[in-house]
Length: 476
Ligand SMILES: Cc1cc2nc3c(=O)[nH]c(=O)nc-3n(C[C@H](O)[C@H](O)[C@H](O)COP(=O)(O)OP(=O)(O)OC[C@H]3O[C@@H](n4cnc5c(N)ncnc54)[C@H](O)[C@@H]3O)c2cc1C
Image (cartoon, rainbow, N blue to C red):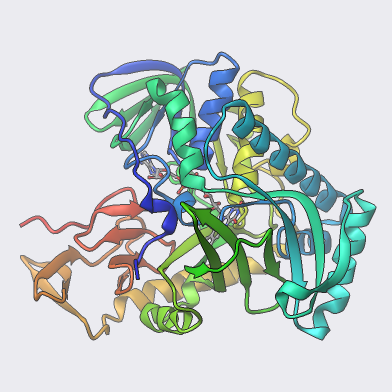
């Protein structure tokens, strides 16, 4: 069994590192689906843009998703309807339907070989208590002119489900590689941003040892650090899930997700004549994860997995992403994030919104996703709970009670030491550089994970996922 996402099996070309100071009109930071989609739209519209990625494009959160391209998105519409009303939910639905078509057209126009398959999307429940909710969802879709069917789903043990058409699945890393090939002249990899300064009418951004001067900066780093004042931790939480891929006799033409308490999500994938079922079971608030090993063991017992991995995404308190201007009257500093585990469509619609802000074109979705939108009073109850979650994770990381990890002080600095199966010690500093939360060792994926905001470091402390921008490698 491989302890990594199956999307990371394919070879990935490496692009050049930044090797000089440069000037560009737009600087995009981060090479996941968000950054690449934005670079693509800007490039198509004749805007001079450059993207910098601190590792290799597509190896972040995007490479660990189930990669469904769908507008049927678990409980999002129910939640948005409940807190924001039917119109907001319908606007969000329309943005997602548009996004599905945009991504499909990009793949066709650019002939990107990313194993795109048209499959039905199914939202289902095995719990009779949730039938009413599912019927409401069905009625909402019908009223929104979506051709949906409410039926018994034989493939899912005769559960009750809503089925829609015109949705897809693909391989997200192959998609990123396709965009990367088209845009390679404008991308630097292994090029990490460490500082952004605003001057009168331009930004100076430090990337490795060089400076990039630009009129616009777009933060596409998943967790939008570099953004001040930094309020996202109280307006969102991190959700973590466990996923696996198991060989399957057949490829089945549907993807599915349930609305029950224990989240189940699935889709199929065909690769070089082999079929896989990609299966997700259980989503947890990152701050409630107390034992990574136990969670993985529980998950592993479900199937005879060939691949197993975990992933995390940002869940916003009003279930809408943050896309657009960070500061109300300033269109030069933009973000696109907070996709509530639906990043393929939201990064795509986000790229159109960001492009339209830059080329000064109207876009009907700007206010829907505005990062400055008013905080809905119904959701304000989550703020203390988010803060409590952060505090709990912070303390948990300080408990230092993992049996396979030793905690020590070297030269007055606190370190954590993991002894691998060959007896080699791996020493790292034991605080996440982002907000000084403690870290826990994830023995399945061999990473150090921060429980507060989800930063991850490899076994020797190199940062592989933000929000930390720095490593925890121990320098002797
Ligand atoms: C379990 C799970 C399943 C999911 N399944 C689906 C699905 O089926 N369909 C769907 O639509 N969505 C899904 N999602 C959501 C989706 O995967 C994410 O929302 C999306 O991939 C986020 O993309 P991104 O580009 O914003 O982030 P990333 O892919 O993480 O990209 C950000 C990039 O920024 C880079 N970076 C960070 N800091 C710096 C810096 N200082 N300098 C330079 N570069 C930097 C990182 O290295 C990284 O490559 C799922 C999420 C989870 C957790």
